Length: 120
Image 1 (cartoon, rainbow, N blue to C red):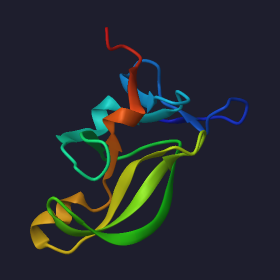
Image 2 (image 1 turned 30 degrees about the vertical axis):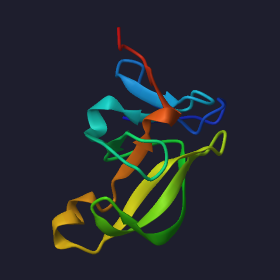
Image 3 (image 1 turned 120 degrees about the horizontal axis):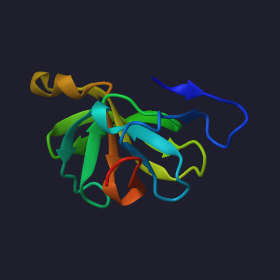
């Protein structure tokens, strides 16, 4: 459940009762831990990341074709809506049938996220 608000800095806040990931640069909420699908390794930018079904406070750039470790994909860079830092990418289209499950999923690189709420 996402609570929308206009009076605060971010567009959306995730419930404080859930473990969340936030932008390391501005602390805007990005993803609920329960929405994470897997850990990923990437050589594209800075290394490992997390794959999520859904995100908040994230914008999406135009899709472009890129050859990643698992083949050719159409991906779009994603960025923090608050501080405009590029966070990772969204899989828009997979050209190989074995990779179709990635379509619509988001990768947030670990270098741009921090754990918030209830990780003690």
